[in-house]
Image (cartoon, rainbow, N blue to C red; front, side, top):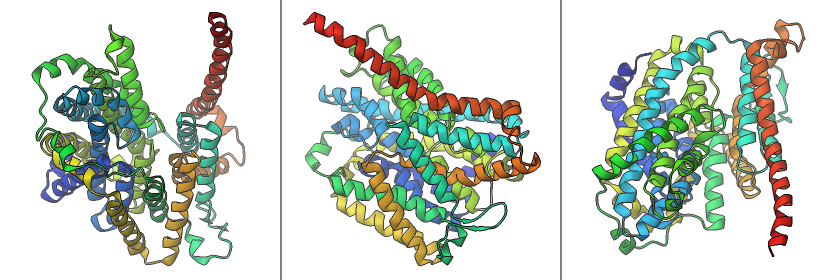
Length: 507
C-alpha cells in the first residue's frame, strides 16, 4: 500500500480521464435538486463489468467527492440545496448571497470542500494501516459483530424514527436471504421463481432504490430543478476565487472541521450529513460571537463543507480495512468490489494492494480536480438549473433500464429494479431510511456467514459472540447506539414537561 503509487496510478491517462469524468458527473448530479450522488454512483455500477474494479472505483470516487461539494452550491446561491448536507452550508451561504457576496460564498464553499477532502485523505492514509493490524486478527465472530454494528449505527443515527430505521434494516436482511444459502447452498424464499435462486441481484436493487425511487419522488412532489432563468444565473460570478483574507480567517476552522468530519466518517452509519451539521454546530459553540452565524458568517460556510468532505474520506476506513460500508455510497462500492471478485477487508491489502492505493490516490486527486473545475465552471454548472427536470429524469430512467438489463440480459432484473423503485418511493414518502434497507441487503451475507461459521466452530455455542474481547465490545457499542435515541427522546420529553409550567408562570 503506497500513497504515491496510488497517485501515479490515477494519473494514468485512462484513469485520469475517468476521474475527471466522474467529477463532472458528480458536479452535475450534486447541483440539481432531485438528483444525488447516490443516484449517480448507482447508475455507474453496471459499467464496473466493463471497466474493472479499479477503474470503476476511481470514477465512483470522483462522483462521490464532487457531489459532496456540489450539493451546497445551489443552496448558497438560491437557498435550494441539492442535498441535506447543503442545508447546513446554506444557513450562512445564502445570507452572504443576499448581501451581494455570492462569489465569496461560492469560492470559500469549494475551497473548504477541497481542503477537507485533502486533509481527510491524508488522515485516511495514516489511520488505515493501524486499523489493518487489528483487522488481520478477525474471525467469523468479529465480522458478524461488525455487521451488526454497521446496521445498528445506521438505524440509531437515522434522521427520524428508530423503529422505522430498524424495520428498514430488517427488511434489507430479509431480502438478502432470498436465493441460495451462502453456507449450505440450500434454496430459500424463491416462491417458485427460478431466476431468484441466484438471489436478489445487487445492481437492479441499488438502481431501483436510489435512482428510480429518487426520480419517482422528485416528479411526484415537484422537488426537481427548474424555474430559474438565465438572468438569475448571470448574477453569479463567472469565476470564483477565494481571498487571502478569508483563507487567513478560516484556516483553523477548516482544519478543526476536517478532523471532526474524518472521525465521524469512520463511524459506520454516521455519514457526511451528521459530520456537516456537527462541524457547523461545533464552530458556533466555540465562537465568541454566536450571533453572527445564520447571518452570513463565512466560517458557517467553511465548517460544514470541510467536515462533510473529510467524512467522505473517513468512510473509506471501515470499508477498506474491515469490509463494512459506512453508508449508502460505500455500500454500493462494496457491491462493486464483490461483483469483481474482491472482498474489502484485511485481505484486500494483501491480494490487491494496487486497488487500495488507487482509492487513496483517487480521493486526493478528486479533491484537486473538484477545486479547479468548481472555481472555474461554477456558472456553467448552475445553468443546469434552467433546464426542466423532466429532461434529466427521462435520461436517468433510460440509463437505469439499459444499465440494469445490459449486465445479464434477464427480464427478472428489470422487475427487481421496478419493484425496488416503488418500494424506495414509498419508503421515502413514509420516512423509512432507504440507506438502512440497502445496508441490510449488503451486510446480510456478511452477517450470516459470520454467524453460521462462528457457531460451527463452537459447535452451536453462542458464547463465542460474548466472550471474545472485540466481539463483546462491538456488540456492547451496538446496544448502546440503539439505546441512545430512546434516551434522548425521554430527555426531550422531560425537558418539554419542565418548560411548560415555567412558560405558564411567565404568562
